[in-house]
Image (cartoon, rainbow, N blue to C red; front, side, top):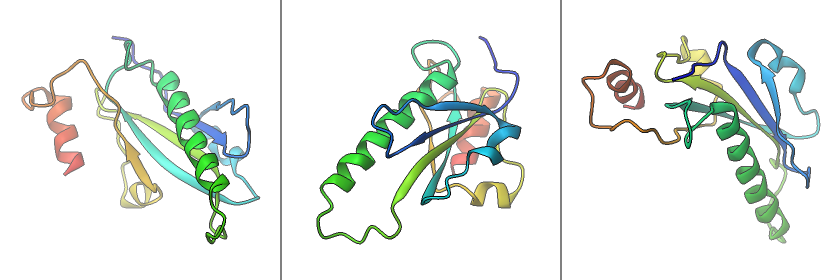
Length: 140
């Protein structure tokens, strides 16, 4: 199994019809803010780097594309909805379950609006495996 050297951040603009997600190093995420609306901050806990569930940057890009398309369709059908809190950008920060990479502080956890956990070749009931047991406790 191949493990990425550092955490990555993937972002995409909801208004971008071509929607080419951008991948950033974790320390570069301050440079991808959107001044024109709300940024939906998501955490992805990658459980696998091998296909078909990885590599994690490819999975995060796919998630960005799907979520941006869902937002565009929702907003296009929003004739009488209040769009004052409209999401203009989606940002996914990728953590890695197998290396037990998780946010280290409550503040870091609290900055996320939601969590994505894609699939894995491993069995979710194998809690005796260190990283799976830790993921179980993190989810709870």
